[in-house]
Image (cartoon, helix red, strand yellow):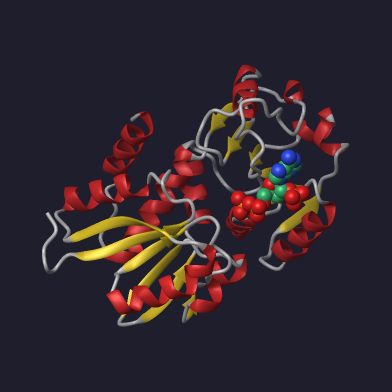
Length: 279
Ligand code: ATR
């Protein structure tokens, strides 16, 4: 029920039509009886500055920021959290009396979805495929928790740059090349393998590495929401697999807590997300 007092949270993206976040957050607001409403805004890149000014003008309580604005939004905000500043990307904005603070809850979202699988951090070796914004967020969170990260990227220079950057977070970070990601000994040493690239979005996409070299007990993650060929093949090899839905849920829970200061009703949000995906 929208009232004169209802606080508005939005999501800025382009395209934004596919977003699952309104279903997840509105279910949570309703469950807790909070006077908030979450709505999508289709914001073209050339309209981003005006849209951010609109957060102040309309007095929105906050927004999520999604593709393609996560990095380009930074100059328009007043303050950044430590994570957002290090990662160089924002997925959550809170408006406090016209002062806009940018946060990044993607990394914490990934860590919480890993915790759900019962993974303990210390000393774990991780192979991250990709070196884009998602890899930066996940890599930063892993490095902060003392994981040992190996980065593979198609464009080697970008991979090297990410290694150097993550090392500043205190992490043990190394580059992995084409040979290593198809080497049985190297792969067998990895406790967790994470695809952060867009490879797998199309049904016809082959996984970036030889999944026949994976072994039972390894944890294989894909940040894509569906069961990609990487996950399907890893599952056949006996690995524990995790798609991107857990990260979507837990980044949303963390954002919800930033906006409302209430504890996120995670199971309600999970159900809403699953129902929305089926529908
Ligand atoms: P995001 O913010 O989702 O991480 P991004 O910053 O555009 O998106 O990064 C996309 C990542 O997927 C990059 O690591 C990219 O590799 P390059 O740096 O070489 O471009 C990777 N990627 C995309 N398509 C790929 C493909 N066909 N094969 C291998 N890597 C690919």
